[in-house]
Image (cartoon, rainbow, N blue to C red):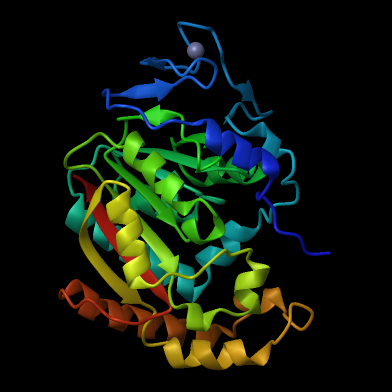
Length: 312
Ligand SMILES: [Zn+2]
């Protein structure tokens, strides 16, 4: 039986409790007493609260979610690294980081899965300090193996235990899974260092493309450009760049989404079982499309949206 994970009552309660505070540089937030503190570790100097640790040593900030999420597909790293869509998205993300945040010293990925994006960033930015977060603690164990020297934490994206800490935060195809997406953006804003720091996002575009694939993936929505822009602005960001991508495959996406009408007919393995030649051809198409994006074209329609925004 297919169930959507991570949308629990506990999560909503946890989200409600949090208050977005004032900026103080380089801070961790204590979930015990809301104190802000500066430390290598996660023990609050005021109330001595410290998060529980997973068996691999990663701190657990939302253990009520980690426990519900057994069975994360830990083979995802290999599937993503061989798939045209993930490979092309990595290329676009790394290009955007080089162009918009060339001086970043640290980078935090919210919803890092098994670490495929972070491993690409590690290769492109060998000296940047990397952090990754997931609600699925099993995925983090795999991510830690795939990304050298990254710090991993289990948490809920609606409750981020940092304030004023990061140069850049990324969330790649994460917001569409979360009902309180604006709360996540506000938490990301709070965790950024301030002026010159920013966020990089990818989300699926166009509700008209909604299909059982979205249901299966537990999406809450696909975004319009206007919706993503207004949610970023409401959360204190100023938009630097926004473009669609996977635009050239839009006709194919419409066709493939007509095929499966119900969750019962949907074969989720199809996403990764693409014949080798076709996989390569689709990747070449997406790389060609990125030439336009690199040249400064903002594509109006596509399977996904890329947004880069800075703290105001
Ligand atoms: Zn405390």
